[in-house]
Amino acid sequence: MSTMPWTDPRDEIEVGVLMANGRLAPRRFADRAAAEAWARPEEGDRVVEYNLICECDA
Image (tube, rainbow, N blue to C red):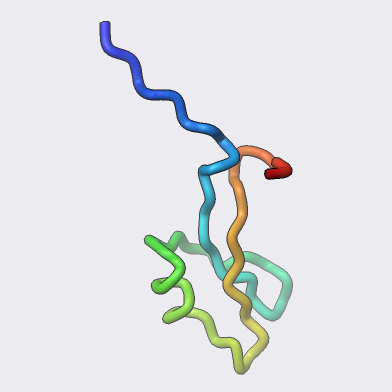
């Protein structure tokens, strides 16, 4: 039986856009560059990185 290799959940980082209204954009981004291309910083959007599994201290 094969098993999946273990990965540290603290390393599972997502990239998103925190919109000016305080909500995360309702979509997923492949990488930071895609999020930056979609965000509108002139309107108050910010690209953020977060962990979906936990709020882990590195």
